[in-house]
Length: 177
Ligand SMILES: [Zn+2]
Image (cartoon, rainbow, N blue to C red; front, side, top):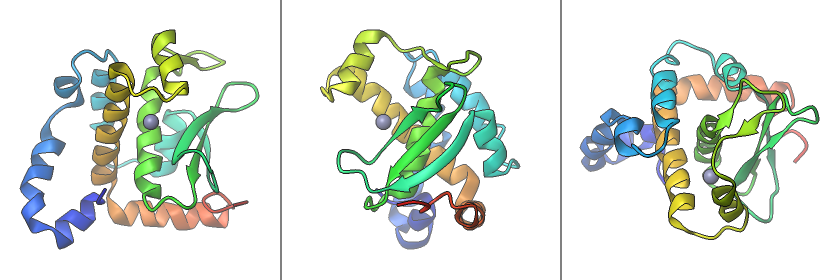
């Protein structure tokens, strides 16, 4: 996958298609997912917010880049279940896309509860855990990918780079990996 700003810079023939994708609301594209509208609303509000503030709004307390042997990344809850930790595979070429994708997954969580609860049906979650590529699993993964592209495009390279440098200093991205 190519980052939005790489498309802008190096692949002009893909720009029109990307702009069309970015303009399409998640609620239009994923009309069966109740949380898509909520994600659209949030995406419309983040342009002038720091990444830290966005993380706080999604109850993300940490992000780590680790060497994971089994996947590109995942979400985990803190011990008390009140916060979300994002893990990203340090070997993945698509670290930023994975980070953005995982933020997308916070939209099917009920962040008003402590511990945070998953709102998607148990059987979908079972399939996700077992990596069975059934329809519902693919739909949520598609949603998270589509959300991720929007999140990266709205925030832009500069804001994300600045945040990465700040978080490196705090031993976050790249911390203990
Ligand atoms: Zn996913």
